[in-house]
Length: 198
Image 1 (cartoon, rainbow, N blue to C red):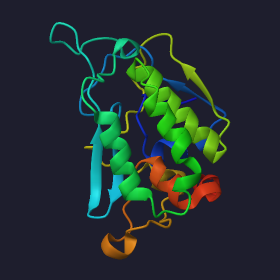
Image 2 (image 1 turned 180 degrees about the horizontal axis):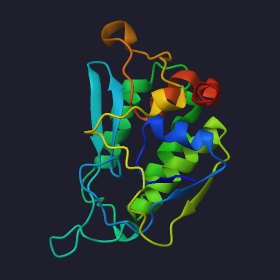
Image 3 (image 1 turned 45 degrees about the vertical axis):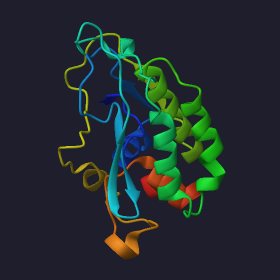
């Protein structure tokens, strides 16, 4: 059973792994890692790839806290900005309107910790895609956890045999862009997302 790190609007690769297993471990004992998918994601906007992220609180100038203790910083209006960016990028996609309100409700509730926010987002997408994979938090640090990183290329989709394009709203302008948040897949493919991942 593989171990995955937590992620915010995880990339398609993350869900391709979830689709292959009945259960996976989620790393719950690591320290927070900056500049990772834990608090950022990649979406397909009109002018290409756009990064979204959110700030977290740190104590005494340190981020060296267990991932479950990292608090989301809501002192700036990042939720409204993220929702505007997502709306602008995906409002013309085929399925955005079906999922928008429920997804934005999670963000609007301002979950206190990064762990809670990320897990709720992951479970939302699992439910909408139709994945029944059990997520099992680790009880001790797993140094071999798979950390899909925004600055490191990976061959996960190729290794799993799902390395192929799907419809993207702006593909006529910029071509197919792989490695985006799973929201790109769900908003464009809707119920067919599960078939793509398998």
